[in-house]
Image 1 (cartoon, rainbow, N blue to C red):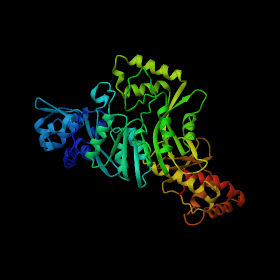
Image 2: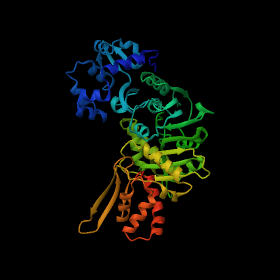
Image 3: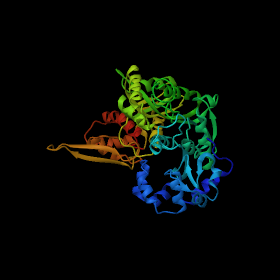
Image 4: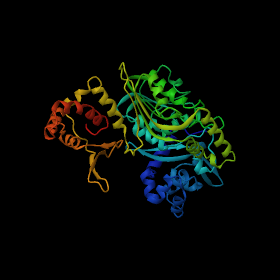
Length: 486
């Protein structure tokens, strides 16, 4: 696909900004009902809303978000130049213009960006092509909101796709590299970077091949992690062509050789859950081989049938005549590999230089209040402080987090009270707490060492001091790890 270069991407973006073609601007134009429907890929309410709208913004929304033909004169009036300058972004025929790609506004990190990508299967009514370039979706926004954002030198977006992770990286990295095996993806990423005034170095190749010998302070990756089948049509954005969950293993194991000291790698991943093993078996082997500190979080797990159905729908293959055969072949592949489930989650890695890396595996299906990046960074920081001497937590001036609440519950027909400690932000951790723990949390003032609070509460509850201090250490460490105390 030929995408425009030179100063045209900047001119186009400047004009779209002037029209208020932003997430909020489009929402104001359409109203909440139609805007929410469009977020679900339903265009009928937005189309109905714009029937009588002849504004320049309405023309751009119809063209680039709804995929409707728009009179060429209206497009010229809206953009300020002939649509013929946009190359293969649009096609012009019989006095009308139709967008060949979706060009959507994207708001994040206090920026209003634009993202060009291919139309979804739901919009076209056809299965997606093998070289389909995916736009911004739930997985990409999740990864962005989980990524640590400290100021760094060099960052790598491994498998950049349309470039969305690179946009976020550009806000806190001096240099950003985006790599992909797909030449078409790199064209989109470069065009999007130019539109959004972002400097992006791109390299084509498999996994770490384009950056051989380079090291980065932060690597992020939303790789083609789908555990596919030879019988299913190949799609660059989801299928690596490798057996099972091998591609995720390769990213985890390869990261070590491309991280600076204290460097991070964060990726989304799928892993096979096989009969006789718990969900941690595969990712545990990957991170063990990496030699890095690791926190593996499983957000969800699906049975093989639900997994296959989801990805066939994702590519629009539920409409194909081969649907049943594709489904059957994919199920056969998973059965042959002994897969009884597929896990999905976030893997965060960091080079700490420790002889014995700290590695944690956790199932966290509860609702998250994004962003959760501070929670990710906190876990590694707490272990840095306490790894050699957990009891030193007693010397820390801990304080309760501002998002922490204690819920009081009574079972029906039972006078016994159950208290639940809950965080309302971040990863939303929760757990039971007894009266001693409740009073201890209240006594942590952020000024005095935690040991003094423990001793004071122990006296109130007539608990032996030394025993209270010893028992408090693992509890306080866990509270610090999960962000209940800071």
